[in-house]
Length: 258
Ligand code: SAH
Image (tube, rainbow, N blue to C red; front, side, top):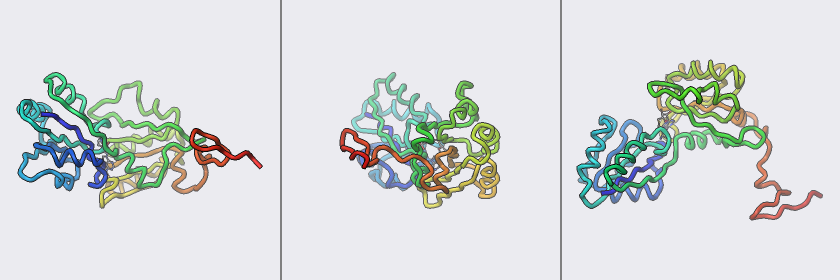
């Protein structure tokens, strides 16, 4: 048996990779994270195979399925939301497989932060503004190590994307405002790529109220940074050198200034 960890993508069932979809089609057992994975994706699986929703299971119960089927031919499609490398809790499963000599593979997926950037029509790395994307979260039941506190991460004013933090957006804004300034754009994207996706754009000063008015308490990303000025101010950044007429690179010779 081989366990294949598959990134299901952010919600839209078409945002899974072809490799991920093919692996689900061929799977003998499916285990999916029912809290966030779109059940539409299960339609790719063959009928009459066991399908488990891991949202009601603990680590041991999931690993038991791997262990019990260890010596059987075939594959288990273990479907995680977005990309499994981001808050996916896959490391302990991979380590279990390594320890038990169960073969495994990870098929990456489109993360929700990428779907949210797409929904906004937003590049996260604008020349002259920010060339760094930070993915993080506010401390919750899982603590963030002190060296990565929000204050510290904010210090260089990167394009900051917070997962698992929407229920504490007021706290997020109060920590970020002294660093980024209260007029810095803050977007909240709820259920990116799902039919009921919502985008709320505000500033660090007003986003918490806007989010409360919209009743959003889960399944949303907070996106803060100067790059998001592009939502209202076209062309405020430097253009990329990649398409600069005068810039020569490996694939194109630039023209000289006339
Ligand atoms: N591995 C996932 C993240 C899992 S953690 C990924 O790559 O996207 C769960 C958190 O991800 C949620 O609390 C929310 O902050 C975010 N999230 C997941 N799907 C989302 C979506 N479609 N839209 C907005 N945020 C989402």
